[in-house]
Image 1 (cartoon, rainbow, N blue to C red):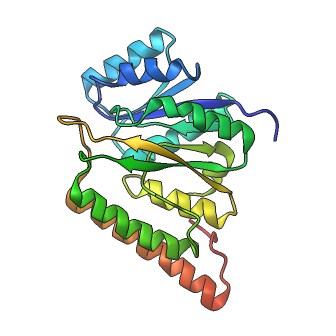
Image 2 (image 1 turned 90 degrees about the horizontal axis):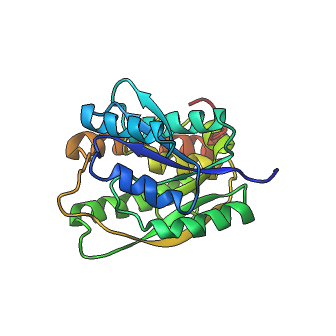
Length: 243
């Protein structure tokens, strides 16, 4: 692979109070920033438009809200069109330790064929129900992959080789996206590297978690991936055959 050209990829949906601060902070570490507005309301859309006009980020807009996964997939295609080879995915709400972008960028340059996953270090702000769901997903992810290569499949702080990410044909568009694409990358044989990083849940922050809908999507995602795994083990059916 030629010299990596990474960008910071920030999907945003109605984060008008934090998106500018996140963009400014990450630009101090990487000058190339891509922001995907996922069908936000007027306030967030106007803020993202200003970021583009001021040259602080390359910006693109989805007409309707499709979910975090849909926004990230739009960002992959948009970044690829602009010549970037890697995307460091960062949430727009400020919950990630942005200084750790340095670690991600160092690993991108050292291991450009790998996906770099944030291994979250939580504090007391982490909601109990989210921690339980995380453990359930870790359990099933390890069975879908066939080993324990994936430490935490939910952390949205990660770095992708864009070509490999686009090739996964990941189905999930919402909170099911993060674990599904990691499983598919593992099936493709993409090396997986972990970076310990603090994660905090901000009091009064904007959460787009939908208790019933997202849990149902995650259940369907695990069912679909486990079915593929079982068919592979029983009949040697290719794991990545079709979407």
